[in-house]
Structure formats: structure tokens, C-alpha cells
Image (cartoon, rainbow, N blue to C red; front, top):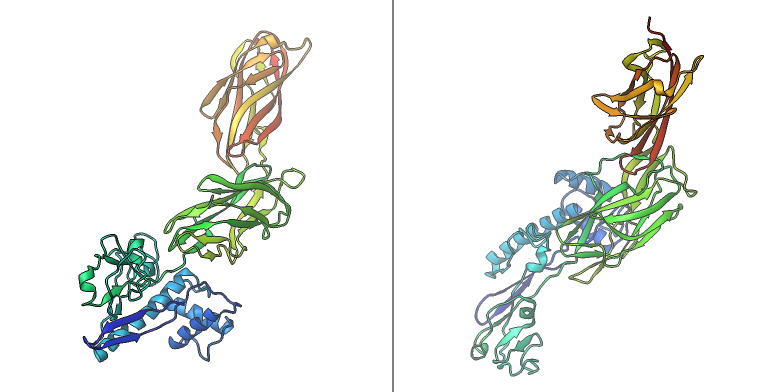
Length: 500
């Protein structure tokens, strides 16, 4: 709990000390939790007319409904979970009530309140909009001391008439311990110490916190079976109040249909942290050391990657994957306060990923049928094939091989075929024929997902007669994982007849 103390002087001869104390909500709260801070939450809700009855330490159904009502009233999504946004609204409201009470107190007693807020802070609660640090750290409430002090005589300040918090520099000037922490005020000249009060700043330090959510910009919802080291979940982690070191994280896949995954890895802003592990159904624990430090006011991206294979390293063909992170208590530490905090409780559920098969189809183009052509003909279509890319993902063309089968009596000769050309949309590729195999090795272009593409094969035909049949093999690879696939299709028989 935090306490804000208001101090002031009523007259030269009389020092009035007036203390206004009000609780604040310092931790996230949720349904089913039992905590003394639940009591503070309920008191606030009761005062605001959102909850009836007497406060307890249990966050029950009535409290849940009251929290949702309050969240609606302050334009927060009514989840019933008391997180960072809800706590800040509540604490700001408490501070506002305190300020009103203090003003009435000033009018009644003549006391004054001195509060110093940094630029970027509008209250003593919440976080600085410029630096991201806690506003309460920057607040100094003067504590007027009317005791008469002797001159400080040494650096330790051990003189009995000098407070423990007062030190002296090499020139004999007194100063406070807080001046050593950059809360600098002009030194107090020894000759004036006996004639005026000494002001001691006090601080109110707030422990940092961290918000973790599924990354709303991660819109991928499909992965390919057999793909390696592909993203299966992504989250944002933002620190408030101070830099926070996340020392460990837990990852599981409990809400999809897969029960195992290969080589699960964590990446922070694109760089791997921790050690890759195989998921076999039990939670994976990652010791991160100092590799995941979230600066105050900043957001880092945590990506979970995996191989889409089972425990036998066989590619999944169907199913779904949902990455879940968190669930470990006391797994982080504020680097300024040194306090141990928890990041990722309750657990955070990632995007549902559907597994699809990296499967393309290649068929003989339906309207290209068996036909007869004349010998001694140039640039004649002798084959046509239609390729359908997978619905899951983009692929890359990686080469075409065409096998020739010759027939007739006498049989058609390979030397009777020349100038092989493969036309793919507006692209044209030249091939090389060796006996019964033609290759087109220089195909290298992207084919978007769920795209139909026609491959037409042309050649010059010599004087021989007979039959030709072409079979096409199209090699592709997955644009992300690099997984290769061969698509095969038989063509039709072309009869070469004498030119009359």
C-alpha cells in the first residue's frame, strides 16, 4: 500500500502535521483470488456505488460484476480483470479524492501541501508518458524538521545532534543522503543551520510491472506440415515504471490438437534466446538469464517458433497449434527496485494456427487433347500442363523436367525434335533435350498461394513420323521453410504424320 503524507507549518511557533492516507491497488487482481488488496478494491467499489455489502479478502462473483460495471463507466473493456489500466484508473480516482480532501484541510487549518511532479506526470499514480518511469518515484513531499542542529563536522555525520540522514562534505556543508541519488538541492550552509528548519526529501518508490499480450499485428493463421523453424505464436511484452529482467518463461501448446512439436525456440526482437527444445506434451521451461530485459516504457516482440513435425519427425498434415506462455511465479525482477515480480500470470494464449499440407497439383490441361500434327512443322504445341499452388502458402518454381516417350513404326527419333520452348504465362524458358529427357533448369519465380498456372511446351518437328508423349515433373519449394515437392503429370499422345 502507498501513503501520501501532507505536511505543513501553521505558524513559526507551532508545527502542524496532518496526514491523509489512502490505499491504492498495487497488484493485478482476478476472479477467485484471495488477497488483502481485494479488500481495498471492494472498499473503492462500495464507495463508488458499484458494490453493496461489506468488504472481504475474496474476489467473488459480486466483485467480478462490480469491476465490470466500473470498467464500463471509465471506458475500459469490461473483462472483470483488474490489470494495469484498471488499477491506474482506480488509483487516479483515489488521488483525486485525496486532493479534494487535502484542499478542504488547507482551508480549515491553513496548512499547505508541497508536491513536485515531473513533466509527463499528471498524478502520483501511473507512469510518466515521456520516460515510462513511475510517477511516484519523482514525487518529493517535504518533511519539515524543527529540531536545532549543530554544524556537521565530518563526512559520516555521526554527531548526535545531526540526524542520521544528514551528512557533511569536505567543506563542512550539510546535505541529505537523497542528494547522493541525484535529488540535488543547494547545500545547506553550516552558519544558517541553527536558524532555520531543514527540509528532508522523502521518496515513494513503486515496483515496476509488465504487460504481456498476444501480438495483434501477428495475423498469420496457417502453417505448413513439415515446415521448420516457423512462427507459431507471437506476443508483445511492455514494461512500466522501471526496466524489468524476465529470468524465465514457460511455453506449452495445450489448446490445439497437436501433442508434440519439434525444436521449439524463443526469439526476442528477431534474436534467439534460451535453448531450443522438443515439445512432448509437458510445459517447456526456458532459463533466460539476462537475455530478456524489457526497458521501461518500451515493447519487445517475443516470437515462438517450431518445426511442424511429431515426435517421430514426421510432418503433420492436419491439426491446429496454439502457443501459450507464462504460468511461472516470481520469474522477473525490477532492475531499479530489485523487487521480484511475476510476468505472464495468468497465462497468455496466442493465435490459433491451422496446419495445412504443402500439396500442389499438376494435371494435363483439360482442353489439350490427343491430336495429329504434320512433320516438318515449327513452333508446335506438343504438351500443356496446369499447376495449382497450395492454399497454405507461396511456393517458388525450382525447375521443370519433361520425359519423352516415342512410338510408331518406325519409332519417332529424339533427333527429330528441336528448339524446345516452355511458356509460362508471359515467361519463356528454353530447354535442352538429351535422348528422352528435356530439362528447363533456370525456372526461378514465385507463385502465390492458391494460384493456377499453365505450362505450354513447344518444339520444332522434323521429317520423321511416329508418336510423341510428354510427362512433366515440376519442382517447387516452400517460400518460407524451403521444403521441396515434386508434382507429376502425364501428357497426351501426339501423332506426327507426313506432310502431304
